[in-house]
Amino acid sequence: MIKTFDNKISIVGDDLKQSIAKHSKLSIASSIFSIYGYESLKKELNGIDELRFIFTDPTFIKTDEDKKDTKFFEIDSSNRKKAISGSAFEINLKNELKGRSIAKECKAWIENKVRFKSNKPDSMISPMMILDNTEDDKAIYLNINEFSSAGLGYKKDNTVLGAVTKMCDSATTKSFLDNFNNVWDDDTLLKDITDEVVGYINNLYKENSPEFIYYLTLYNIFNEFLEDINEDELANEKVGFKDSVIWNKLYDFQKDAVIGLINKLERYNGCILADSVGLGKTFSALGVIKYYQERNKSVLVLCPKKLGDNWKTFLNNYEDNPLLKDRFNYDVLYHTDLLREKGESNGQDLSRVNWANYDLIVI
Image (cartoon, rainbow, N blue to C red; front, side, top):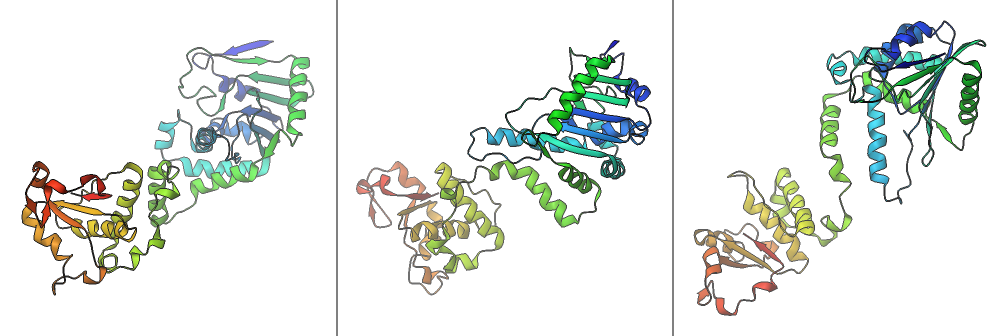
């Protein structure tokens, strides 16, 4: 006997509720396992003897860092892990804020009845669910791509043309079950990840400190940028710029700005410091200048003429120069000098200035 389910009119989850018997055994291969899939069949699943689950795509498995597609692979793997707490089609369920209690129940059920294994890279496993009630009562469901409320037909997904097929033929079901058993027992094909899944679910309902949540939020916002950090673009502390007077006069937020500016300059050859008025942009810029000065780079400061004396103060042996010990050495010219082809400005002959010789220009 063959049945098909489109999960619109005929729902595969409803058929499973009728078909799963007490003490039955389930063998599932699917790309996603969601706690909401468990909740959809909780009554029936709590009565089974065991469930074996294979992630058809690598999940909780480290990749070869030398492979060019590692980044994309890890993004997919991360998405599959996150789907345990709710797939992309279960957002409304996650918004009901019942996830913690469901996760707690699901974890207890897993610890008693479930084992998880993951397919390793470079192997292909088709999605299926094999129901083994008794020797004479077996069935196989093909094309259940997700063990989630959406995959079971209780939430709308993006399937336009597709169907789950159920076959109850004993010979066919036994053949699929034998193949599943062979793959399940082959450690070269699969890796046991039960502990990783349990640990992940455990984190869904444990209490976390506000500080942890704050840092986790920052990580999830900025983690994709961390992968782009290149050691060559980071500020080299061996230069000694952190031993300077200017560095020790900076507030923490200004120090962060200096490091960020240096990183952006090294990567993009330009950067804009957009702090509000009064937050010490001049001192932040001097911190950057000090870094490049210690690297023997030539620096030009272009400023409005009315601010020229401020910038020149840090160059001279003045009593009111708070940075005298840093021995700053940079040229100061004015914005309007860019329009002049001759004449003098701050003792420099503009017709002879080698503009291309400057390594850093601060405007």
